[in-house]
Image 1: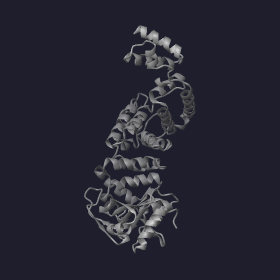
Image 2: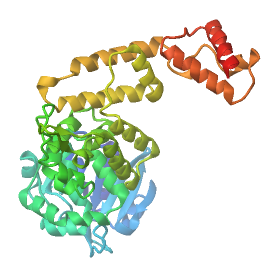
Image 3: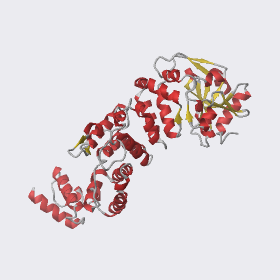
Image 4: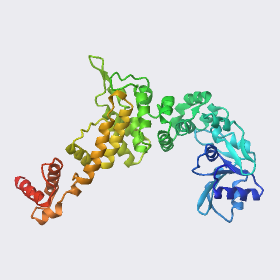
Amino acid sequence: MLGAISISAQKAIRILEGSGYQAGLVGGCVRDMLMGKEPNDFDVTTNATPEEMKFVFRNERVIETGIKHGTLTVLFDNEPIEITTFRIDGEYKDNRHPENVTFSRNLIEDLKRRDFTVNALYYDLDEGIQDCFGGIDDLENKIIRAVGDPYKRFNEDALRILRAVRFSSTLGFEIEKETKRAMLACKHLLKNISAERIADEINKFVLGKNVKNALLENYEILGEICPEFVKMNGFNQHNRWHIYDILEHTAVATESVPPILPLRLAMLFHDTGKVHTFFRDEKGIGHFYGHGDKSAEIVKSYLHNYKYDNETQKEVYELVKHHDLHTEADEVLIKKRLNRMGKERFLNLIKIQRADNNAQNPELTKMEHFDILEKMVDEISSQCCFTLSSLEINGSILMENGFEQGKIIGDILNILLTEVIENKLENEKNALLNRARQIYSQI
């Protein structure tokens, strides 16, 4: 037995075998189990045709998820198991999907159409692993290698190019040389891939444990998504804050921030604007004034073009735009930041700045400053007023005390909040009412 195989997957395989068919696990689940990981799902493959599978599983709930291409989903105790017939792919005309598929009884024909050797492993519950393309050796040597001719594999499905980049990040594997050459030669085909599928691969890539090396080794391919990545490579920053070029700095910073999607995306794009804003002064020192705004424009375009949800777009845009915003360890200033950004985004900004600083000159570290800021944010957010909702007065109270309903109520409350934040006014009902009357009399 290989690892902890789902009871439902085992059941599906045994039912097929009991009906006279060949069946086993294939692909990523086999790879993950060999690496000692728990698979996210279990893919079963079989020589039974879809119609034969429908008969075999006639007593189970069957969903015809992709019957045209030989795939059914069978539910055992509400656990979905995807089962696909051995197949041979027809001609690819769109660099993504075959025009048609031919069902096969031959396992090897099915395995040789797959993307990478580590994903072309088959596991029989009784006979064990069948490895037709050296996938186990590549797993042991941490190599990503295309099955067969890599140029053919990537022309069939250009998304495989980004899948290789993603695996190099998530698995920490090196891409085999001929596979890498084919990726570079075929990278222009990514223009034929849907925005959603590209975004999905980029998201998985950026969350990988080896994202630093994967970015540095594959920046030319990622340049098809964002051209600035190519321009950033080898770009000397010419100032004492930086020991890396822009791309190296970005790679180190991205891996330094916690693997949370908005944070990692923000770090990936935070300095893309530097190649557009760089200049050197009379002393030869490099400057990038306004690069935060330019980087924010670039990431806004990326997030829009690749159809991210509105919440992610706003969060990443704000973090990139303000990543260089310095905050002194000052109570009033921190309350103003909290008022504008909210606690969660402000803490995320500190995480961003911490990672940014970690990728700069280690002799100029600001880590102690970020420690102080985080502690102050926790204390201030639990004790101080920095939002309208935490004022000890509201519009209803003002109207109960004779204030005229309308826009003036909101204006007065905002003035009161500003004065409370700036420690000019106590957040106490009577003090707020008295000050509100003064403001009202002056309007």
